Image (cartoon, rainbow, N blue to C red):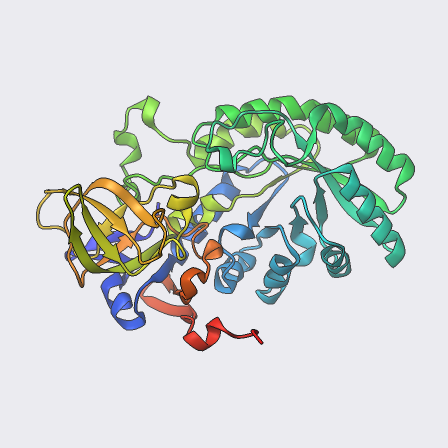
Length: 429
């Protein structure tokens, strides 16, 4: 589900009219639905009933403090990939002891900070990193909890930029080398606690088969490491995909049932139903690390049309948001529905490119797409922009970062101010 729908001819987030927010706070503007975030977290948590488990939200998807605070209050753990993300979690009231620290390039300063804060585990990506953590922990007189990330060589069948579980990807240690690495760690690295095992095969997976293949390949290894080294948890990663196309329709209760069975995307319920039997009797705590699943459909980016430009080949709708605000279409051909804030009176469509103000040919949100027509001055919504939207935004072309609003029922709260020109040069000498 998500909290966006047309009411009285206008697009709403929960009980707040988006047109009102665009007028009050300006555009570009990110708007998030708290009810959607909590619904997705709770449904995933419930889908794993019967298994000793924890849900660790992937902070990189959306790191706004108010979003983190919302999840921390639900008891969520956090999957972090930098010292800065750990700092954010702590500032939002999250518990470091429920944080797993992933990423292939942790610095010495980050490792020290994470050890001092008492994180749950480092998800280690290489033997060199494992030895560095052992050395630094020894210098501090501490024992570092670790889990090595296994690369099971499973094709997630997703975009090549967000595939992480194949041999040619930079992440993790090959599955054939894991047992030997744990032996060396146990015998040669006295400042480590071999606490768990981790894997993650990719993002935006829309079928269950890659998950089943990966769990099937790694489960015997997890059991072996539990028996041999006493590991206590296995993180099976995140990666469940969301609906990007026709995402507004996907907010209605019966849309999924109307699809032919072979076109139905992976749901939280099916994910749990298929995986729980494979992991419930392993005697290990199971961690999952969702990001996009929790916040992706919970956010939209509002932008206003500045100009219409009709050329010989096509019509451009030039809006005030650009690839600096939402880079997914330019970076890895990400798709976002584009819908008007005022419900169209007809079903007529026109072919257009929706482009931004940035001086790059790749600055577009869609090309040659049939859309309900809109004109200069009209505001539109880029749907399903709650994940990898603001967190990947930049000041390219010296554009200020947009504002963010969190909606809870009929209450809309500004949770990040729009940057000013003065903010652009803060810290420069």
